[in-house]
Amino acid sequence: LHDPSQEKMCKPKTDIVFLKVHKSASSTVMNILFRFGEMHNLTFAFPVGGGFQLYYPHHFLAKFVQGFSPQSPRRFNILCHHMRFLQPEVQKVVPRSAVYFSILRNPVQLMESSFVYYKGASAFSRVRSLAEFLSQPYRYYSPTSGDRHYARNLMTFDFGFNPDGDSSPERVQLMLNAIEASFDFVLISEYFDESMVLLKEMLCWDLDSVVSFPLNSRDSSTKSPLPDDVVEKLKAWNRLDWEIYTHFNRTFWERIERRIGRERLRREVAALRARQAELARTCLQGTGSVAPKDIKDSSLRPLQHGGARILGYNLKQGLAGSWSAPAAAGDAGAAVQHTKKKKKKEVPYLCDQRQLVCLSTALTATGTSHTLSRDRSHRNGLWDQPYFSRPALLLESKAEPANQLG
Ligand SMILES: Nc1ncnc2c1ncn2[C@@H]1O[C@H](COP(=O)(O)OS(=O)(=O)O)[C@@H](OP(=O)(O)O)[C@H]1O
Image (cartoon, rainbow, N blue to C red):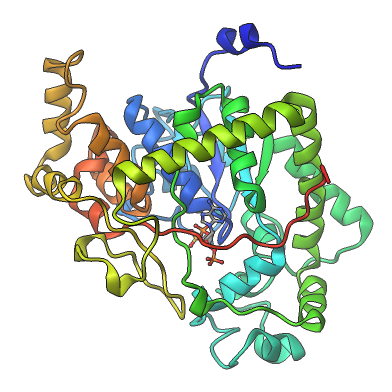
């Protein structure tokens, strides 16, 4: 049973590795980490050169992190950009105490999303539909092509394994054991709110730290339902991903039972949704996401990619405008730090807390990396221009449920 005294005793975790698995709601989670890191002055392991991926699809190497040097190995609080996981290298850039976690998505929905988003990838560029691709995958898919991972076992690949490896029970077991050994817990994007309750429990964070607006979501016009026979082919083609997903979906619900229990889960999910609705009323015009063409402030229009139409938000009057000013002012990060030093208690940020929360919740996190990686302190990136050029999106639909709680 939940023991509130226990909750008070735990210390919020600030050393974190998040494996940002593609097309699995990972941008929304990354945004939560950025906001938390920003508010608590944590350091981030950003990609060298101001990119937003750690030399993906190359396996991760410590030298891909800006500020890392083998002579004086510097440790960072949070590592959360797209990477292909390789634990011995990851361990060089984060403290030993770091908490490792990731998020998975049902491979059926994940591949449907990936197909549209990475329509330009070599395996997909010559077909009109996923059904056509799956009817003869080897006609279009080459295991030696450099972008093949977008078309098969993308989660397996991001965890560092061979997406074309065999799926014998022994090999699958080895892979699952390796993930279990490296990761403290794994979330499930179909149960995003439940995942956020588990996240805050595991990290000893408060509820407000895990409130979010969904980011990087497609408009329903670029989503297509898949017939049953295509779903079956897709599962067989992505067998390794299917094994990973079903295993961690099960352990997710076991962990929830063990750590939280159904009753508290239900209450906390309700509280989270109420906070999200409140934040939406404070921050957003209308009730949620809008098509890119309907976003009034062009600097808030999300990055559009492949065949996907990515939704965004209109922020309430006054919120976006007042943030552009410090962003345009050059060394905005330094300005914020300065302000923080001077007025720490009364005015923690240059803009008020409401603006900080609205913007840091409603904008995609990828742009932040450009900012923060340029800032020598690796802090205060919310204030720079690139952050404003890649804004946010809202999800309308839920993927197929597989709730082990029944
Ligand atoms: N909160 C929440 N709950 C459930 N699903 C969510 C959520 N936030 C984002 N999404 C969906 O995640 C998809 C984008 O995933 P990523 O951000 O990982 O994509 S990326 O690899 O970083 O481009 C994208 O899926 P598709 O819309 O099917 O493409 C988003 O809709």
